[in-house]
Length: 145
Image (cartoon, rainbow, N blue to C red):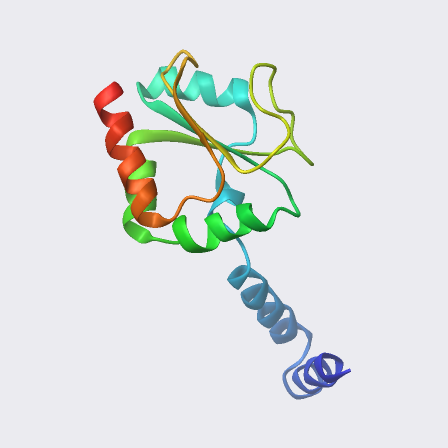
């Protein structure tokens, strides 16, 4: 009820355009970094080969609390995202909305894969990974490249 009153106040005082802008801004606060990642494994492989980059594949689920924690606590770190974007083609596959290719874990989330350009698994880990541990994993994978 309280939200309804707030939206009505904004609408009557500022108009529909400002209400829509307000809602758009508020909704963007709840978007995750992974929303802008690729969601198609085949397309990611082609991009990785074209750009000569390795692949980071994050498999999650829509209602997975550990996936949400990973997104909020680890992927929200600017330095982590800068490294990932620079070094990897990024793929997020929700087992609830996207096709997870054969050969990858489809149940149990989150699962993290680091792949070479051809899709060969270099490293795999599962579960919530805090920022420091994720940086350690990135260092380990760098050695494997």
